Image (cartoon, rainbow, N blue to C red; front, top):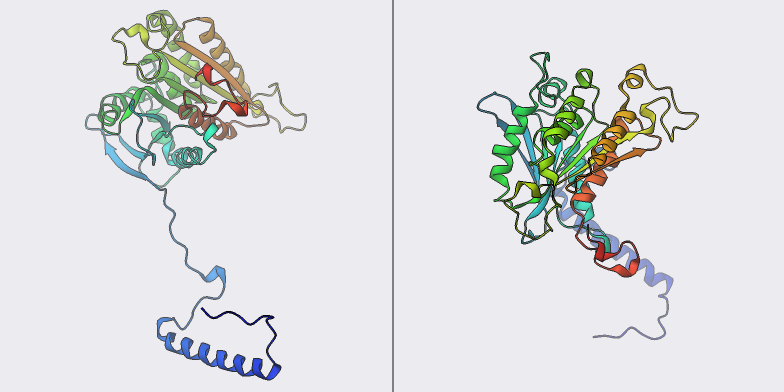
Length: 359
C-alpha cells in the first residue's frame, strides 16, 4: 500500500487544471459508452419518474363464494414473520376488510419493531370484506352485518350466513393449518360491522374470545340487538361460571370454561351532550342524536359487567374529540395491541407493568 505524502500539500493550479481536463475526458468517454442504455428522454424531475404499485408484505387475498347462499366475500390474510409459538398464533378478524385490513396489517407488523420490553407477540390478521376495489360495499354490508330480525327487508339479515362461513369454513380450515390459538381469536368491527361483532357475542359466544365493537350500530332496527342481549344474559350464563383457562393449558372439555373479553367504544362527538365534548365542537346531526351511540354502548358494557360472570369481562372507552367515523382507528389500534400482548412484559425494570400480573 502506498502512503499519502505527509504533510498532504495542495497541487499547483496548473496540475489541477490538467487533472480536471483529464477527468472530464474520462467521464465523457464513460457516458458515451453507456449512452445506448439510456432513453433519449431520461426524466430529470421527480414528477416524471414512474411509481411502482404498493404491496403489503406477507399478505394475500382470495374471493370465496358461499355454495348455499351464493354470497361472495374477499378474504385477506397476513402471516407474521416469526414462527408460531407452541400454542399457535393469536388472530384478529377485522370486518370491512377492504378498508380496515391494510391498517390492521401494518399496525400488527409495526408492533414487532417495538423495543423488546413492550414488543407484542406475532399476530395473524384476517380481513373479511367484499370483492372489488371499493372501500365499502353498502348493499353487501347491510346484507352481511345485520341479524335476521323479525320484519327485516330481504336485503338485510344475513349475519348468521356470514357467521356460518367464519365458523365452519374459515376458522375450521385455518385454525389447525396456520396454526391459530383457539384461546386467542378476536373479532373487530366498526359501526354496522360493530353490530355484527355484538351479534356474534350474543349468539355464538364460543366462537371468539375477544370482541371489539367500535361505535356499534346498536340503534339498528329499533335497537333489536338489545333483545339479543337480554336473551344472551338469560340463557348463556352457564358459559361463564368458571374463569378462563390459563394460556398454554389444554382447553377443557367443560363448556363452562369459555370466556369473552368485550370492548365497546364511542366518540365524544357522537352525542350532543357527550362528556369530553369541547365547547367549539360542531353540532351533532339529528341522526346521531337519536341513535345514542355513547349512551347505549356505555350501558351495554355496564350491564354485561353487572352479570358478574368470571369468564365475561366488558369495558367501555370514550374517545375524546372524535366523531363516529373517527373512532375506528384508535379502537383498531387497541384491538391489534391487545391481541398481540404477551403474557408478561419482557423487562420489568422499565416499570410499565408488573410481569407477575400476566395479561
